[in-house]
Length: 280
Image (tube, rainbow, N blue to C red; front, side, top):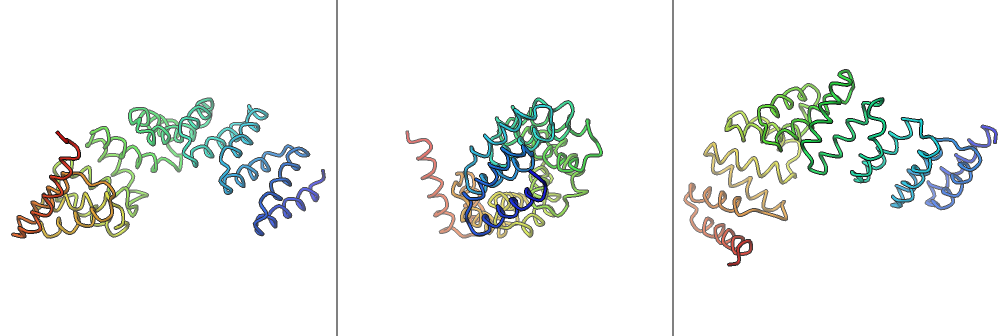
């Protein structure tokens, strides 16, 4: 099939997609794959399936392509990225493991998958190997961001602080990095240092429950009980799961402000949670 004919059919498929006639576009892509075998058309069909919510169909198309192009790291990397986008963490690790020696980006994606599986030691290993393998890669600072998160989860707070500080070069205005910094400072009992990053996180993403939770904890430790009350209350409104610890801290914040009725109300919730957790 000549290039002009291919371009015409691709434009026709795009027109069908814009009109909501996705199945017509699928048929065109399938015919083009049979006639040309072009990698780009496999990718387009997989993405269309993904947009339609047919994740396994897209996965099968890309799996077929990898079978045909087993020597193409680009195809394997694309397949791994597709799996990651759709939270297929274990499958992504399996697919990408075969190209880690030749494709540093695969190390990064495997590390991210392990992090999402809460396999923090493995995530740390792969992120670290990624940075060593390609120090000039544009993903290096993002790797530092995730290493800060991983080290925090592993309770390696000084190391987490080091990685978070490095990531500030690119992510100083990213709410999650500021939250990580605030959590690390809080864990190191450096409550005053935690104020600036938690305030930035609040400014950038006040609707995140974790941001409100740690804002409450930080200001409670600084004995600013009015602010602690505000942020704990916001956290409770945003979160579907609230620990007994938060109700206790909120009650103590009320007590410090001599709001006894509010403290009793909060403690009642604490007692209810305790009974639910330990019914005996």
